[in-house]
Image (cartoon, rainbow, N blue to C red; front, side, top):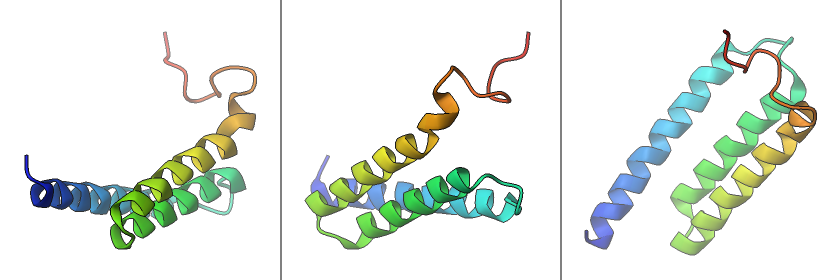
Length: 89
């Protein structure tokens, strides 16, 4: 696969992920926990930066966004799978 095609695939996938975050944010209310809202904000920012930064810096922005996402959700996962995310029997 050539580099130009990979860049197009990355850009399309990034825009699709950003659209997904926008759709989720539209469903959030004032009752949505702040860490959840912040997770989505940070991930959206990382995705946005990855579109305009050079390749290595863009990749770094995405990795930092994922790290922030995981860090912001660490408290919810401290004692196991959070309520509402477990499979029902």
